[in-house]
Image (tube, rainbow, N blue to C red; front, side, top):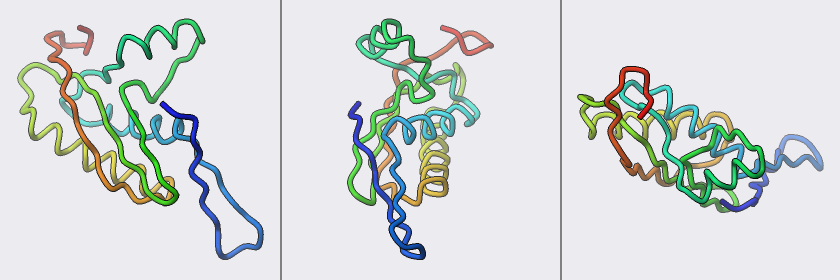
Length: 128
């Protein structure tokens, strides 16, 4: 994940700019996805998990890849769903909730939310 910042300019105030890092956007998206019924967990990849261990990071953006432009953002989310959940329905609800949350909290336009189902969780508490 890049350390790129999105810069938003507040046109109502002079010389005011807000920078939102990709990590913040990823955290918003990760929390929004986890709130959807049927999502068991976000799924990171091996390299990000190893990096988190060595850097001591606990990221709310685990399993989220952000590609951002000046005023827009594209997201890839990697999730595990609960066994028995209707996968297309869960994916659609995740897309909706993530788009709504990121746009309302950042004023960035979400152009795309790609959902990658990485696994199925059979346990009742979301652990694999």
